[in-house]
Image (cartoon, rainbow, N blue to C red; front, side, top):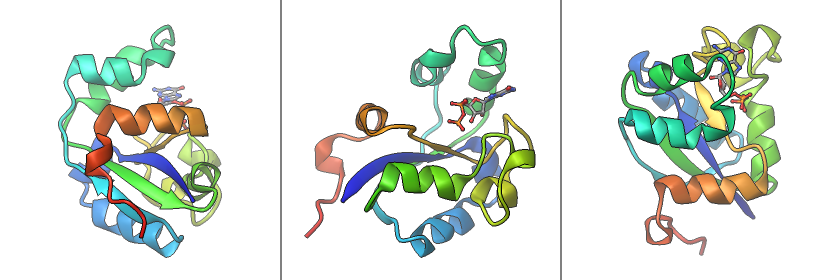
Length: 140
Ligand code: GDP
């Protein structure tokens, strides 16, 4: 079993799609081990996306991620990191495969419904960004 971090982004929260996306993830075999509703500060969003700080869209991305509440979710499944990336679909919903979360719920390349960790190493870092180990329900 592997854990990964998803964030249902502010567009999903504002549009009332959070529950549908959680149901989609559960239907794909993910177990929810932790879940919060948070409204990120500019500093938090900037730190979370620090890897993109030199990109031209960084300021806009931080503005979007701080525009309203979002829902970080700790997910567990076999092959969770790679599996979540497949279920999410491509960054740009115009290029996302049919049936993926971004194809179904994303508006554009920035307002793209969901974040998912891109490697097991980053999943560990990103899970720790939002959850302490005592917040995560251990598998029985
Ligand atoms: P992800 O791993 O599929 O989320 O994609 P990236 O790590 O490359 O980018 C992080 C986030 O930045 C994306 O999910 C989008 O919200 C945003 N983003 C990525 N590329 C672009 C872009 O070209 N323009 C804009 N405005 N936002 C982007």
